Image (cartoon, rainbow over all chains, first blue to last red; front, side, top):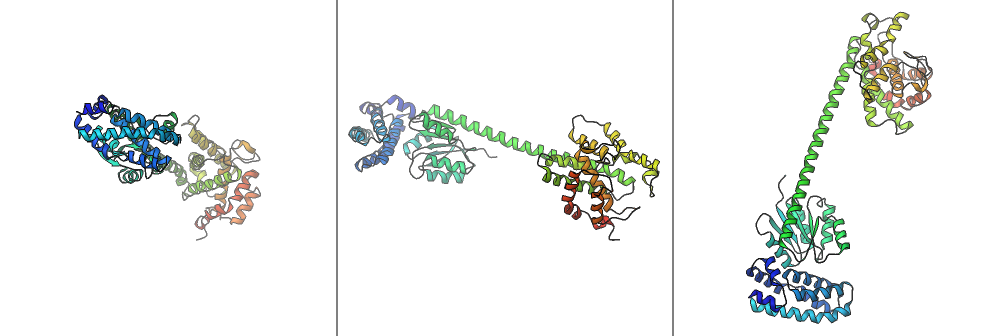
Length: 114
Length: 362
């Protein structure tokens, strides 16, 4: 079930299981991910055109996704993080919808498995 | 010291903290958590002797990782609590900067449990090992210092005992030697103040002052009928009396120590403390700067003490008269440099000369 979840969201189940030991524990972390605020921080900051705050949100989101082995979401999160780090806000605005789509997909699928 | 048994995990993201906690779930360590720099600093202050390792995120709200490191540097925690910096990306600049701040190591997200536990264990062991070595070293240094102090104290006791043997035999009060030591010390410090720091160091002053106690040690070999004679010596007796400088050296030579600074001071002072600047002293008739400064100083101090003290065969001279006689060369010629120092030390010498010694109370 968790393996299928990872397939659906383009994640790496093998890495996740080696890191978190078992499915039960992965579920615990999926629960934490639902409660994590970093995406909301990023979204609010993008709406407010606050480049610095957006960077912190994106940076945190990237770190979390890497730890969770959400391969695709961490890829786009990394892209927007680097754009925000170098203050290319227009580029980041183009990238943000991709982050949003991936994030929503992951959230939907998490709700399905929990 | 108590073994440190606590890990402090500082990251604003709960998932990251939980991952680290799970890695150390075996219970070997107690875990403390903070979600921002401010909380981290509070926990550090409260548990600084228990924390074995700090995992620290760099980017956080309310004081970031750098603020925490800064606080640790200011409060001397950086040498006892190793910091492993948690970072998302590896760039050479940020890594170098992190190490410069005093971080012990860096781990990159995502965490690999096996790597994290191994590194943490290594670093904890390294730091605890270093701390215990430093404590051990500190203890040894103290012991060494204490035994050095003890040896110095014993040495001083022996030197004083040896020096006072002569005084007891000559039925003097035994205080002449203590006064010569005190006056020598005063003169050496004024000499240093007048003529520069190169001569003499505090250690050298201590050695010379100790050596000055032995200046008359050779008198032990002078027969009673001369040494204890209250009247003025005849020529023959005076010649014999002068030999106490040579006798002292002969005694020292039996225990000669090559290249030993203290031995050299003792020898020079025993032998040359009756030499005079114009070459008219004894036993060798040395003149000018051929007489070592320390021997010159003891010679003027010896004369000064003899003049201001009441003896069986004479009254004490007044301070005024004493200084005049020495400056005018009535007790032999001293070098201008030495006289300048002697006059410079005048107030110090006078304030350390007692009325009792001058016989004014009787």
